[in-house]
Picture 1 (cartoon, rainbow, N blue to C red):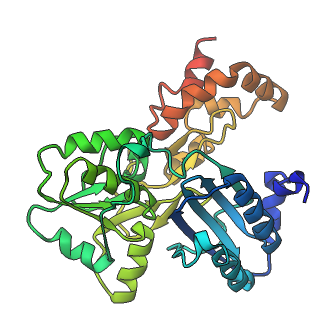
Picture 2 (spheres, one colour; picture 1 turned 135 degrees about the horizontal axis):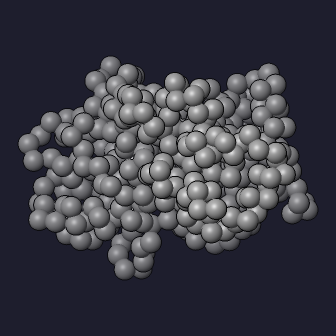
Length: 355
């Protein structure tokens, strides 16, 4: 098969129309496995060809150390998808986490990328035993462990994720990336090596590496939520257990968040009203990720600032030229601000004001 056939060739508008016109439902799933892949590029191409033929969509990372996938699978093709995946010895029996809000609209295209790691952690895996992970706890066991005196719960996600939802009483590291968070957590837990540590993340993959990292540094009772928040919600619903997670679960697809409880623990970044709806600035030259309530969305036309709102009304050729002028400097400047936006100081707005 030609390599050109192993990539999406359609624009976003076309992809959205095709998704909306589909006469079938989709399963929204995530899964991961740490396993040695001898040829990640060859595996990537094999998976892409197979999943493209089944109509699968999603974002998947493949590396020497394994696979990390978030995707949607057409319900009529589900059994064939599972059979094909499990036919690879490396992925046989891998467990799936099914989304809480399973509308099948999370992805518009199929993207599979080869990376150095399936999660960017900045660690030298040769310096410690990455297979010596923490004890995996079910949702019930996690709830029970939280009730015990001296237990410490740690959120292994980024600040913009925990901002809209987290387990009650958890340590919420003020980090923008997982790489930044690991040494931060180690410092915050210093002196607590003998206490029970409970870790959690979205689907479990970050905790696999983080729990081994803590054990390497002398923590004796390290535990992790098996299947992450996604499977925790499924378990507590099935067993009729109370949810100790409040708010929304941030997800990395078109949905951005899944409602877990009715609690709204965040605020609109523009007016300060209770709100936990993340959005991207309507100005394509900005695209900053921030929290915006419905009133501000209407007033600001989906933009994060007056500068961006004014900009989207300029002719398209003017907008295109401005994006070209800003170029790489803008994209590097906005990376941090999109995670924790200071709407008055974001790079794009400062650039316009300085002219």
